[in-house]
Picture 1 (spheres, rainbow, N blue to C red):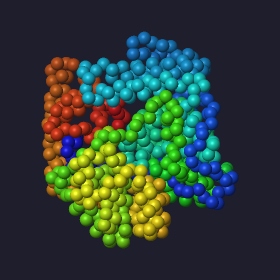
Picture 2 (cartoon, rainbow, N blue to C red):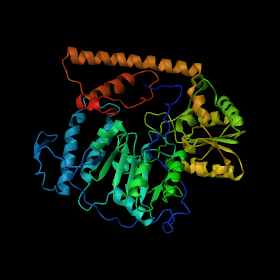
Picture 3 (cartoon, rainbow, N blue to C red):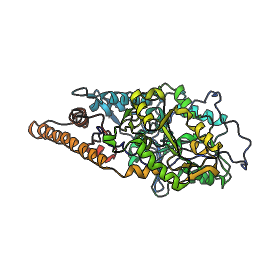
Picture 4 (cartoon, one colour):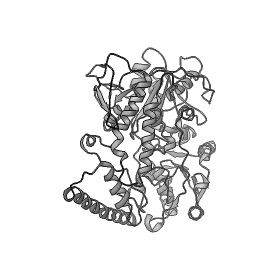
Length: 527
C-alpha cells in the first residue's frame, strides 16, 4: 500500500540470523603475527579468466555436471545465434557478448514502454547494470573479487565476509552500502557473500535460490541455505575451510551485529581460528568498487521532514520520557538506538535515504538527562532542527557516534546495547563491563500503536483501496472488453505510476510492485 503520511516507518526486520560476524584478533592464534588491518596500497591482482560453466550450487543429492545449453537463443531482434558444441570452450569475449545478447533478449519486453512512468528511470538503470555486467568479463580483466583478494593477501586474511547489512543492520540498505550486491551481482534482499583466496560463495535462503542461480557468475558457488546438508557459514568456515589449518576471517565491524560477531568469534577461537574486525572504518569492497568501472553511488543527501505529533500521536519528549523509565528499571545510564526505523520513530522525523522506506542514516543515544541525534547536519532543515531542540534533542554529526560511545564508556557509564540491533563497531566502543544487554525498549514501545497511528494506518489503506479498485477496473476493461495483452511492466506503470501516484498525500510506494506472470510467478520477490 502507498505510504502517504504514514504513522510510523515500515518496521525493518530484525537482523537476519543468517551470515554476519566480528571480534578482535585472538592473542592465542597459532598464525604468524598479523599485519595492520588499516588501509594499504593494493598490489596488482592476478587476472582470472572466466570459465565456461554455470554457477555451482551445493546440493548434497546431486553431483556437479557440465551444464547443457540450447543450441539456439533468440536475441532482441529475433535473430538466432548458434552456440558452439558443448565440448568446445567458448572464448571469453564471445561468451561475454552472447551473455549480453541473452540479457537483452530477456529484457526486450520491458523496453517497449507505452509511456514513461515514474519507475522507468530505475528500470533503465537496472538494464544498464545487467548489460554492463553481462558483457564486462573479458579475458585478462581484473574483477572486483580479484581486487578484494589482493587486499586479503596483503593483510594475511583467508576469508572476507560481505553481508547485505549496512551500519544500521538494515534489510534494505542505501545503494551506497549495497556491497554484497556489487561484489556478487546478486540483487536479492537477503544473503551473505564469502570470499576466500580461491573461492567465492553466496549463502541465501529459499526465497532467492532461483534468482541467485540466474544472477551469479560461473565463478560463484551458490549455498542454498536451509536445505539438508548445506552448512551454516560458521560451520563451513570451521569444518571445511579451516579443517586442516588455522584461518583468519576478516569483517567490517560496522555491518555485522554485535551478537552475531561475538558468537562467531567464540566459535572460531574454539578451533584456533581468528576473527579480524578491520579498523578505522576500512571495508576493502569499497576500494574494489572505486577501482571498477561501475561508479559507486554517493551517500544520500535528501533532507528529512518532521513527522508531526498530530500523526505520530506522541511528541519526541513524551517518547523520551518513556524510554528513560525503561532505562531506570534496567539501571542504564545511556541507551543506543541504531536501527533506522527506531531512530525515526523516536525523534519524529521521516527521510528518503532508502527506497520504499521513510528513514534517514542516523543514530541516537539517550541518557538520563539528554538525547543526541547523530546525522549529517546538511540533511536537517531548520524546521526539523527547531522541533528537535524543542523536544530536548541535540544534533551532532553522523561521524561522532562511535567517539561519543567511547567517551561514555571511558567515564564509566552503563550503556544499554541491544546486541541484535546494534553493529559490532558500536558495541566494541563500550567496555564489556560497562555494557547493559537486552532488547531495546524502543522496539516494544514502537510496536504498540496509539490512536493517532491506528487512524493513520486505516486511512492509508482506505486510500490505497481506491487505487486498487481503479486498477482492477482498468485491467478488466483492457483484457476482457478490449482483448489486449497486459505486460508485467504495464501492471506496475498503471498501479504505481498512475493510480497510486494520483492519491492525495502520496509520497512513495512502501515496496516495489511484485507482478509476475507465467514462470516469473514462481519467484517470490520477482520484479
